[in-house]
Length: 487
Image (cartoon, rainbow, N blue to C red; front, side):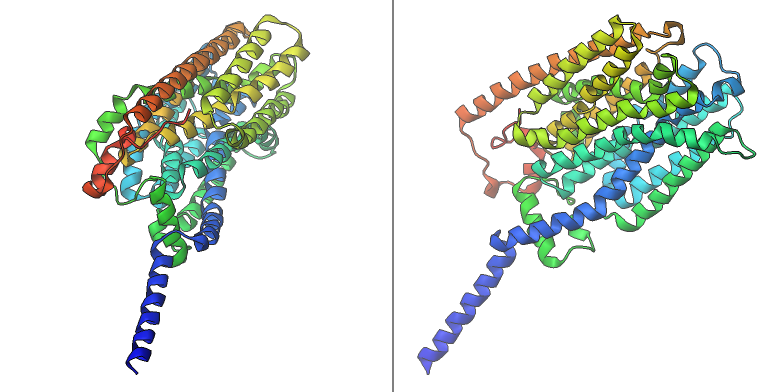
């Protein structure tokens, strides 16, 4: 009897131990749970965040479509006034990204991102009622306050849900929504401006596109969740498996506290600003093509409506390239090499556009230029996310990267000047130089990270997690000795 009792006790303890192992340790069962976790997370996060970025780019750039629809003539704009209306957006956009990411950490993505969207869409609708140059400038300044937080907010949010390897294709897909917006912005604007009603054509563009944003924002508030640890759509087993996976990859923890020290480390880290310079230079080309695409094509001799429609072709080329940026780092993992390749091609293509007068050649290379321009923003964003650790530092780094993209919009709104029409050589040469800067900075980062990885390999230090609290480990950021930079 004693032996039978001991055997039963041993079997019970073995079963209990096996159950605890399944809950607390990664195993084969985790593979299926992780697949289920990623399916559910992608379904709840990606469609709506993609749609919202699609609409935010349309809302930001539909001022260019409104000009092609006759807004400038109706309001009596002259000289550089239209360029200043465009750039007014970026004066506030530049400075509001870091504070927005700090507030996102405090309030959660589910509340913060839809709130931003509702605020900027209301302001887009207000542009339909603007009667003067001053009113348009004021509205665009306020729009910049709220749109500033969306892109860095998404990048930061994904750090809580995905491993660094999983982030890459999802951030690339997110950025492709911006180029996808360029495909549809022109044809959509052409259809809206043709509405026969009591309002002018450009007013319908602002009002209807703003209404679409409000609808998606409402859906986001209902469906998007803040963190895996609190997501209602996950089962307890999926949540536990996901948290193990994220912890093993050093993903960000929702429990990590705001750290002023990490803010200062991010602001003082030259590599953060190097990523930001690449993003700035890439965004200069992207922003100018999104806003001035219809103008550049119209200057080739096409009518207003035809130029709106044809502007979709370069954007379609850029969309294909951004989809490729989801795949290419999996084929060859060195982000810097792909960034240098695309920037070199864009530099060459813009040099050709600037030196030829043939309309067909200019249009063909405008399409090729958009193809070469488009991948670098998602690539550098993913590269930054791979290499920067620390909950607060990564949030600040994401915001700083996109912040310089705002400066690109500010500068880019003045490089395609009416006095340079119809060839716009100054603007094309400026974007050509920007891509040369991308090549040089990406090369410098590649060489530095090679040197730093070799130095850490020689030191052969390891992280003694047993002697440090999670807060202390997080505070080491990317200086932790077991971290190796992606090239």
